[in-house]
Image 1 (cartoon, one colour):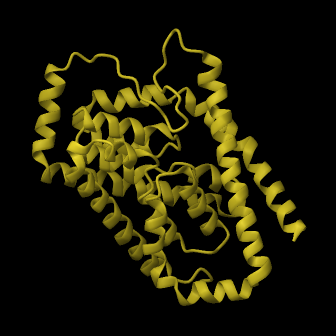
Image 2 (image 1 turned 90 degrees about the vertical axis):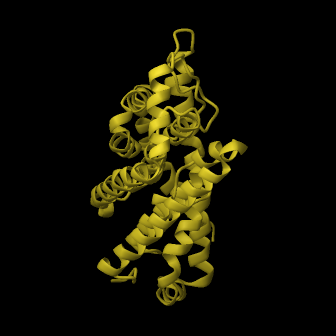
Length: 296
């Protein structure tokens, strides 16, 4: 049993260095991307889907805040949520044998994201008009947005650069390392005690329900949910379609920001329903195309 824990620790340490480097680079881009989305509202669903692909914890938080302040449309927010992959991409990078699956994952999330985003804006034209009117009258005062580790996303002259570009990426990388370690230990012990053939048999028999379960996991407002989904797929526990179903619904802390605003509960539930439905449909369609079995 101790060998299982040791193997999980070694595998998790391999991930730590890679994701730390990735988050240091992304720390320099977060503010610029947030401003780009806000200032180009006519192209927002497209830009929201494009920039949402970048695995950074702050985008869904910023997008939710901008939506509540009528700086972006509902369609743009939906596009960001659908495209957002959170921590899944860095985890994929640690599995060389499946690293190429990053490309279809990103392409599908991008296309589905901006397509659904524009459709939502067509239906909710009132939201689109409110944003345009607000942008015309808004004085564009400086906004402060807080990321998942309580760091300030906007770059300010008086802000500590060490904290912004090194300390936060390090803290965030350590958090993800802990999540990965827990998941690896849990699944390592599961395989050790239950036996691999029994697990595969269970997954084979319940494969038709996994997209639905994956959506429920994806809706958990925590970085751990995307780590779990990616790890389950990369270790052949769920199909690519099921993984996609969960990741499409994985918007990090974005839904938490929306739920804090009691005046927007109806719209929040609408967004939640749209994202969940899109995740389910995408997951089942991909499973029909690629097969429901993780062994196929």
